[in-house]
Image (cartoon, rainbow, N blue to C red; front, side, top):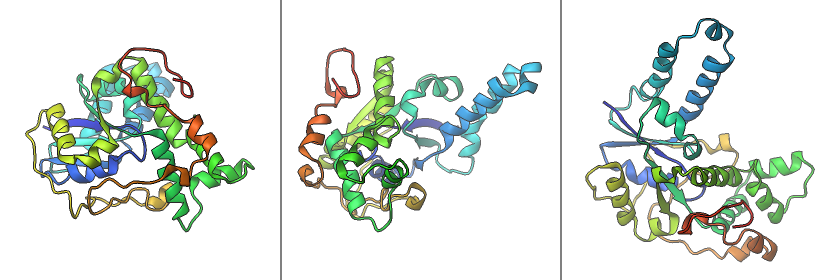
Amino acid sequence: MKQFYFMSGLPRSGSTLLTALLNQNPEIHASTNSPLLDTIHYTEEYLLYNSEQYKATPNPEGAYKVLSSIPYNYYFNTPQDIIIDKSRGWVNQIQHIQDYITSEPKIICPVRNIQDILSSFLNLISNSKTTSFIDENLIRNNIEISNDNRCDYLMSPQGIIGQSYNALLECFRKGNNQYLLLIDYDDLVRNPQHELNRIYEFIGLSSYCHSFENVSTKQDENDNVYKLENMHNVRDTVEKIHRDNTKYLSENIMNKYNHMEFWKKQRTQKYSIFGL
């Protein structure tokens, strides 16, 4: 019987590296970015709320059977019984997990300093030979292409960082962070075995001795789909790369997106996306 766990969190925070490392363990299948959550969400939305036929003759038990079978059908040909499904939306869709997969969600949640995430995206753009999805959005909205505007778009409610950040923020606001295991990117690259041991303890699996040299992904993701080259590449060796954020981030951006790591705060308080 397959056991389902989840990976969510912030982009450019080590989730691709984590899946590559976890897949060294023959008992585990850690997915690339997965459509499983969207498949459950949109199937439920149509079946329960938009289908005239279902409204006319409701069949709750049948609907539950259909929805709860989706994870097992999606991974029917995966030989491993321990599945770690990756989607940045899981942190804010815990009810879907509890309704259709397991009553005790366990979500591995990579996080990272926001300025470092912004700098990482801008570094990718600077090394890309094609127009990124970020610049395409700026062009579409007649906004000047600059690193400041790129950062503001990434951090907007429509941007990839802003969406993920707000989803994680909402998870904390709802008190659902009890289901999360936060993995800080800096801790992961400095002491990867320690962070992996924390994951094994979290999901109730015996520890596994990993290799941190010659790291490779189990499945390649076609980053042309995401319109940003090398977004899901991993380096061969796990190590901390020191990048000077001021190479990409202006003083204005550094100040604007400073001290946003609310998950590091120990006391309960109200959070807002731009003022913590």
